Amino acid sequence: MTKPDAVPTTVPAFPPAFTWGVATSAYQIEGGAADDGRGPSIWDTFTHTPGKITDASTGDVACDHYHRYAEDVDIIASLNVDAYRFSIAWPRVQPDGSGAWNEAGFDFYARLLDKLAEKDIAAHVTLYHWDLPQALEDKGGWLNRDTARHFAAYAAEVARRFGNRVATIATHNEPWCTANLGYGIGQFAPGIADPAAAVSASHQLLLSHGLAMQAMRAQNVSAKLGIVLNQWTASPATDSAADLKAAEVEWARSVEWFMDPIFKGSYPQLALDNIDCSLLSIHENDFNDIRQPIDFLGVNYYFRAYVSTETPPRTPPCALGTTDMGWEIYPQGLSELLLKLHGQYQLPPVYITENGMAVADRLEDGAVHDQPRIDYLKMHLAALRQAMAAGVDVQGYFYWSLLDNFEWNSGYLRRFGLVHVDYETQQRTLKDSAHWYRNFIKEQ
Ligand code: IFM
Image (cartoon, helix red, strand yellow):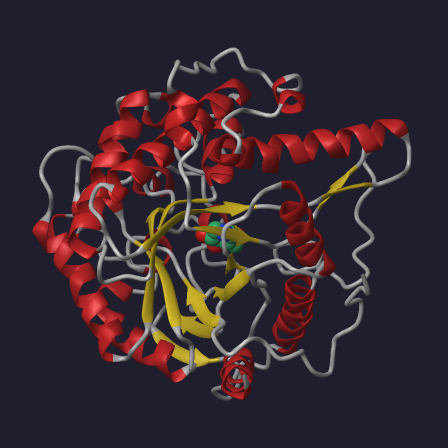
C-alpha cells in the first residue's frame, strides 16, 4: 500500500452515493443545561467539580446550540453536506434515566429534525455520547447491570418517536472512552480510577448495546441501527518480541474487546489474559444479547497506538507532525485499520463517524486560515479512498467537528471545528477548512 506521507494535491473521487457529513455531540455543543426540564448528567457533576477540567469550564452554555440550532443547521446546509451526526442527551429526554419522559426535551430534537428535513440533511443519531443521567450514576452507573436495561428502554422510546425520521441510530459513541477514561483512569466523568471497574463497565456497555438493538428492532423502524467505536491499529515501536507481543495485546484489549462480542459472541482470550477481570460478571445469556446483527459500524479514527515496552517508552516518529491534542498525524493508519478490520470480521457497511484535527486556530480579520486542517483532511480522505479501493465498504465520512466545542477535560482549549466559535459572542465563522470541505464535496 502506498503511504500518504505527503499532502496529496488532489484527493481521488468518491462514489456519487457516498455520504458527506459533519458531527457533534449534545454535551459538547448544546448548553441549555438547566432548560426545559433537562436533568443533570455525570458531565454536569464532573465539570462542576474543581480540578477536573483544564480551563475550569463547563458545558452549561457551550455553543448555545440548544437555542441556536436553526442557525447551525443553516450553516450545515451551507457546507453542501448530506448528513449531520449528533447525539441525543439522555437526561434531556428522561431526566432521571428511568421513569418519566420529558416532552420538552423530545420537542427540541423534533424541532431539530424538522429543520434538518427542511434543508434535506439526513440525521444520524447517537443515543449515548457520554452524558449519563446523574440519577443512574448514583445507583452505580455503568457498573450496575440495571443501567443497561434502562438504556434499552430509552433506546426503544427514541426509536418509537424518531426511528422513521432518521437515517441511522447508533447506540453508543466510543464505549472504550466511557469505560477506560471514565471508570479506568478517572480522566472523564464519572471520574472513577479503577482498571477492574473499567472492564466491568465495558461489559455493561456492550450488554446495553445488545439490549438496545433488540428493543429498537422491535419498533420496526426504517433507521439503520449500529454502534460507533473508536479504533486504532497498534504499531510495535521495535521488532523486539516484547513490543510485538504488547502490540497484539493492545489490539485485543482495545479493538477486539468491543468487536468480538458483537461479531463473534465472546471476548478475546489474549485480552482476558492481560486485564483485571476481577469485577467482570458475565451472565449466561449475555453474549446472545450482545451479538446482534448491526446494519452499520461507525469507526472513529484519530491516531494509531504506538506500543513500546521500554522505559521510558519510545515515542512515535510523528513524521507528519502532531495535532493540538498532541496526537500523531498518521493518515495511513486509517486505511491500515479498515483493512485489518475487513480481514478479521464480516463487516457491515462502515461509516467514518469521526475524524478530525484540533488546531490552535486564530480568528484574524474575520477569517481562520487553518491550512493544517485542510492538509489533514486531504491526507485522511486519500487514505480512506485507498481502503475503499481495496474492498472495504465505506459509505460515508463525518468530519469531527462541525463547531469548535467543549473538548471534555480540555474544556474550550482545543478547537476541532470547521466553524470557529467565539464563546463570548457565540459568533460562528467558517474557517478555510469549511470552505475547502464545501468545495470538495461539490466536486464529487
Ligand atoms: O471530542 C471528541 C468526541 O466527543 C469523541 N471522539 C473524539 C473527539 C475528539 O477528542
